[in-house]
Amino acid sequence: MRFITTLNNQKCMEWKINATQGILFSLLYEANNWAVEEIIENKTYYFVSRNLIMEELPMFFEKSDTVYRNLKILQEKGLIEYIKKGKKDLIRITAKGKSWNFIKQKNNSEKNPSFDESSEKNPSNLGKKSEKEPKNSEKNPTNKDTISYKDNNIINNNIYTSVIEYLNEKTERTGKEKYNPESSKTQRLIKARRNEGYELEDFKIVIDKKCKEWLDTDMEKYLRPETLFGNKFESYLKQKTTTTKKLKFQKQNNDFAVTEEGLKKFYGCEREE
Image 1 (tube, rainbow, N blue to C red):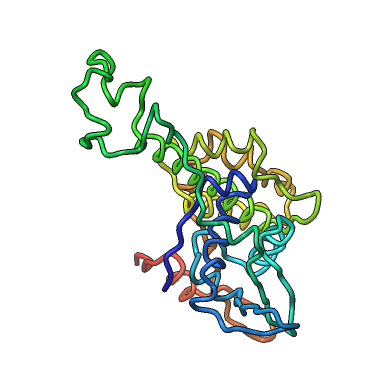
Image 2: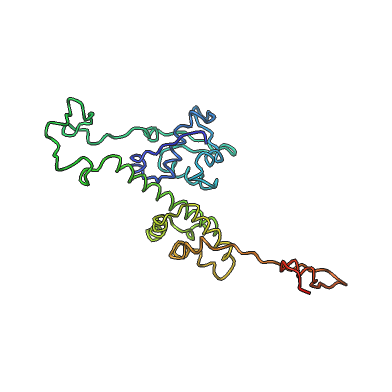
């Protein structure tokens, strides 16, 4: 990974895009610094490889199709112009998208100026702050607390999307059959497991194990969030992957016979005389 991406929470909420789309746009916003230019009809586009996007944002993208879908969403939101030239994906930032780094300042009125606390215009010893209401009280949380709360929400939202997209991929669900990462019931299940300390990789391990066990069987219908991420999540995660040992057969006179040597190797011991 060569580039640093930052998430503008304010713009994501204003434009109604999720964290995955926001972090992708953050990378595209800097495309003029790293991507190859293409001039088409007197407009400057930038060639953005889907593989490069997956390399730069591995926490968010694992499949090329996922990158494509989110590029189309950014286009629908009016943030980028997106065209294809052969096999190349070309983008350019729109006028709306160029406002990504412009943040609306809040609480900057005369009653609450954003000066340094020790400045003359905002003295800390003039009696405007009550000693009964400390700076870090519940009624007046610090910016750090607010930022931490928002970051946790972003992380959770990203987990919901990553887990459910992985489940849909492994179970080959498409169209209306796909599970929705925005389902409140599904999010409650995933959040409950997250609160127990489980990470994204743990969800993927459970999905992989149960898909290997249940796909193409009568149990396939239980490859769903309420089964996989419920109270049995830990037992599914700790479940051992079993392999069946096979006896070695020796072909004799066009027939297969179990040999004494084969039995010894299978059981891992010698027969007692």
